[in-house]
Length: 396
Ligand SMILES: [Mn+2]
Image (cartoon, rainbow, N blue to C red; front, side):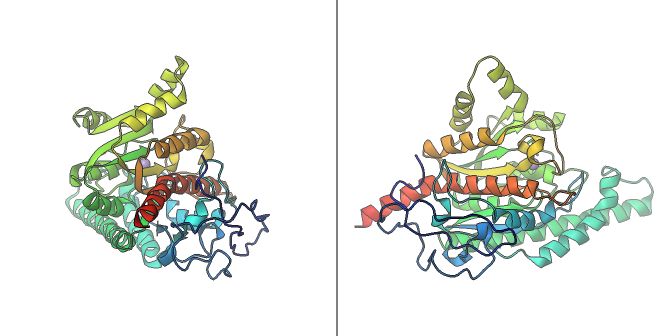
């Protein structure tokens, strides 16, 4: 069933003028709706666009139901930098996304906005990356020369401190959004970007689970010496955030021995649906729906979704930091998200990471990213809307 169930207002999304003119005609007018309770006060879709908003919408973060925190940071990406430009790239491409969604309906009406891309974090990323690069080059090997080893340690400390500053920024913004009763999301940046958000949510929703869509397990106990490496995010989450009860990984096809041991020794806290094993089941006749059912059954009621774009097949993200053959297709992911929402799971937040602009100047990576982002929002809002309607009815 499309979201939301009641009829849509007879309005046309307020769009920013964009370079390439997009045909965004008024969506089929429906009957007059009851005032949807999820449209925040002050949100007038007919108002003139005042800002250069996400998906071309003109709503400010203060009025949005979902607020995206952009994190232009990628100091520790081991293979090819560029995900720091992800937020700007996805933002630009989002203006071309058609707003009516076959699975989730008029997602935009709930109110979607992104905070301004923080220039200081972008600058910090560049600086930290310069310091990190020599370490990445040697794979984190500590030099035997004493003076060089000292410089190495100092560089690591600098990069780790930069990552901690990013976590602070993300956690602070997440706190502000949550205090307002809205839903926070992170748009990375590399996969270390959402740590501050997950930390903040884990305090407010102890017992929460994480659905991770990724090619990599990201369970390394620091990578190349970087405590906050993109490859360590879920090691950090699972060892530092006791509020996170469960991690369910999907699409994994690149992991180390110690990561496999971490999963094995997690006493069921980590469940991994390896890409190959998913395919094996399908080759033996299982449907993708049956696999999705098992994935969702492994999750508790409150779910955070962490989406690394490289969880998709590499033609969806040819320029991502660490592409790996295999992976999920876009419709498979969409099916999983819709099933997740329809089981009544509550999505409390999400992130999209590792989207990297093409080196050829095309918008493909951003375009896929923007569509994944819109689907994540639709999945999140499906039940959010139902809860709001219930609340409004109860209050009557
Ligand atoms: Mn990842």
